[in-house]
Amino acid sequence: MKILVVSAHPDPASLTNALRGVAVDQLEADRHEVRVTDLYAAVWKSAVDRFDFPSLPEAGRLQVPAASSAAFATGILTDDVITEQAKLLWADALILVFPLWWFSMPAILKGWVDRVYAYGFAYGVGEHSETRWGDRYGEGTLAGKRAMLVVTAGGWESHYGPRGINGPIDDLLFPIQHGVLFYPGYDVLPPFIVYRADGLSELAFAATAESLRARMRTLFSTPPIPYRRQNGGDYAIPSMELRPDLTPDLSGFAAHLDGSQ
Image (tube, rainbow, N blue to C red; front, top):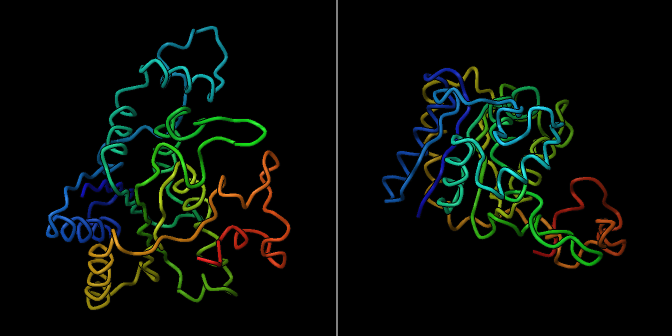
């Protein structure tokens, strides 16, 4: 199988990049074909601006969805974006490796998403009508592929537990896993989280590395997170609200998990 690994840490000797190396080594040992995008090594341009849309008239307003749609439709996005889109289409699975900074992904990785996820490629796909609101949340350009996160966090595991001060880790990662990955169609696997990352001993790293190798060996057999598909009948269209008879006692992120799976 083919796997794209995208990593985001400025220090080549970081735990993040060490974990990326462990994952890549195991995947290659299992005879998968792996490509790596190291965003800091590539000096990835993070901000979306006029330079992303070469055909945009100088006097024209920069309305990003419209400019992105026109550039994608005519094949004139910038070369770096086109290259990354081709990698996503090539890969059977995507792995994002990053430290949890300020409760989210590093800005350079968010910028990769902002620029690579062009209108017509990752969003704005499919029919939008009174009965169907596009191909997204379980459908779309990247449907049939798998994705997962490998995340390092400085806090203790308890800090990210159901009653932890930082909030549950599943809630913190929901915008990435559900919004960035499930939205364009990926089957999203449970994340691999490393806590107390700044003080990880050599012994703890060895155990962590072995756990990560085990996850890589089951990359294509681990059941995905059971997110509800948008067009599977659970949501009213076009309001996009969960049907009132489904998990009426739940709201927020947890309501979008299908407990029947």
